[in-house]
Image 1: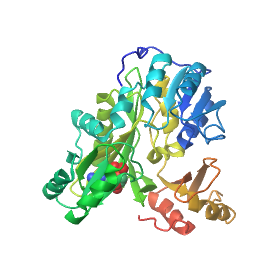
Image 2: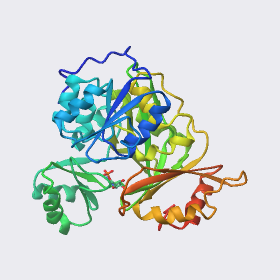
Image 3: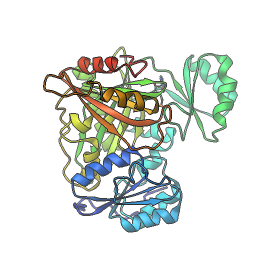
Length: 398
Ligand code: AMP
């Protein structure tokens, strides 16, 4: 995929309120983009295979079709003044069609780069930002040799299609090499071996860039995962200010170097000795940026809309310490019971303001992201105490 055939990006072109924004994908990210954009006066169309999707519920129009349905994508293009997406694995034929027949300010290059771990790592390195040492793996013998060189543990990953820890294997000894290779090879994609980073913290920064070249980063989030799924984001991150600034600088450097339009989420590891390594990128709103909805002057969703529409970017200033906790399928029922019991009260004396967001998903399956709560407090420890007190998250791992 190249930019060839794409309508030329005009840095003066502004998409004004009243216009229709088309979103490929109808999940929670599309929903929150739509809710933010509606406040700004935009109309929304979405394409998603599920009737009454989280985004479809709040958009003006939902086209119900598979993501690789080129005719449906054409319909979305016809109805929209500008197109964006809420996931990065956009089908290549659909991308090609949209680039020809619609206005897609984010372009296809960034999708092409972030759809594949090698291309992504090379692009990050080219912007002068470190990634964990890695190697392309083509055979089990090569894997064995690379594991010996990197030393166990190390992480074997599929180059495409992985998320929430799927498509990866932490190799802890040479005995696992054969099985790891065979298992991940079933995904029919290239494999990459990464050195294991013994990180002290996982961080992320979301940056935005607009066609007029304005770039801004949100404050760095400290992220805690449970079973490879984001559990908590803590802001301000409990790291020295200089490291916070450095992480934000790296994200801005990546956004500028990759010519990002819209949002880019940059996930990083921080080692004990203060080194930062970028793990991966996501060219869209990100779960670790949900805290911005109440805690920052502009949310990541508003910022994405401002960026793709080429409006001036909003302020990313943090207005309050905040902890975001994810609500998965297994948490929904106990949470709704708790709502009756005072934990959500805000009477002026309450040390925490809990802001609940639910995504309108019909089925609360285990581990499925159903919503999140932004806990605003005068200190993040107070918000973390709230999570412990609620008692519905097994491990807050704070
Ligand atoms: P990813 O799918 O690449 O985001 O990886 C999911 C999770 O696996 C990360 O959030 C880390 O906790 C862990 N992980 C991935 N790569 C590495 C690595 N090279 N070193 C240590 N932990 C890793």
